[in-house]
Length: 511
Ligand code: ADP
Image (cartoon, rainbow, N blue to C red):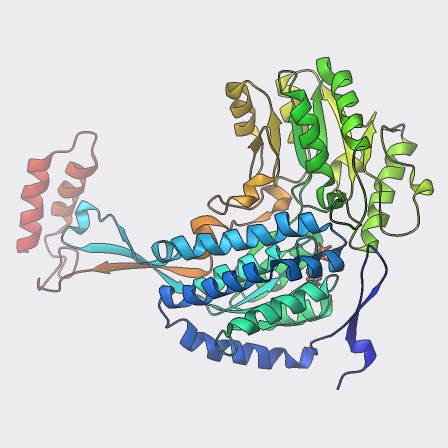
């Protein structure tokens, strides 16, 4: 029995209601988790991809049958509205599983590769060998998707998995554990360890074969440092400060609606939310008017028809407050929302649009993870690109224009893991596209083919029929050097000389 102190007490952020307690995983059990994970790996990795995908299919069907219950748990635990629990957390998870079930076998099977002429007579292949026990450490903002998608990817590839979900949303962590339990994965194949950063650190130190981390830049760096000591490979999905560029020739009404959604969905607690809005100066006034109208129509609350839920994590409110206070003290203006000292008690923050902002303010440079949207006008395409690229992040971005040539040109020049034209955020919802960041937004990609293959060692294989007794590059070397010289020159020189190549090759064969 563990004492009360070793339980995560859960309160609904939106209502303050007590939701229960989740028992923390004691650090001394880390070794047992890895032992079970390694034992399970032996059998799980030997199943065919098709057999493994059967489990994932069952998981998808079970989740589809229990969608409303899962949405309720997510909404209670995070404060996000039910619609967003469904559309932005459950749907992408189910779609990812569907994608993996449809394409997993093709992506993970042995691939034929080309063989160069100098290795004539041989065949080349690439094989994908699972790594072992994968540790997934996940955050609280999309607590289902950002845990389950890496988990199912690692599982499909043949690994066993230990999940350490965020302590901020432990009910969802428990829900994930129960979902996998219900499906009946072989014992030890999927394990969930509950607790905070100490538990995360203890599992990181437990020598997993791969770490898949989603969370803050700060923690990502701590994990990368720990992983480096043991040469443990990682994927780090970190923060973002995504720019949205609106050109004068955009569909302004759509762009205004898009900006409001992209900035305030999930109360802005989205690594890919629109966090900086750059508007071409000639339409600035008109656009701001549209933006204010859109924000005025938003409903905050907890019912099914609400647009904006509460913040999830109290510490986040302080970060938003500090950024806003710094901006206001330096002359920024509130277009919507309230000054921090006027905020109401509790976890709801008003959607806040801020103007008269400069590029060096924290509100532009640092991830806010809250419902604030700073706006800056620009004059030229070059300036817009420079401003958009002017932070240390590079996760996602959006470009709004009816001129596709211009929009594509700008998109190509943004240092960003993804860019959306005339929409925002949604690359994450296409599991066929790679997901990940540039600069401080992270290391590595998942989703798509890469999303399964990162969880494997890529193995190069060459096959020879074994019929020949010798190879030209084997011993003895006597008399071979001048022949190799001629062979390679005839092959690599500007114009290939096949006669010379053939003659020397035959001579080498006879040596
Ligand atoms: P966020 O603020 O987005 O939750 P964090 O990086 O603090 O970002 O947390 C993301 C996940 O990382 C959580 O599951 C958390 O418990 C875990 N975590 C935090 N610190 C560490 C650490 N030092 N080692 C391992 N995991 C950690």
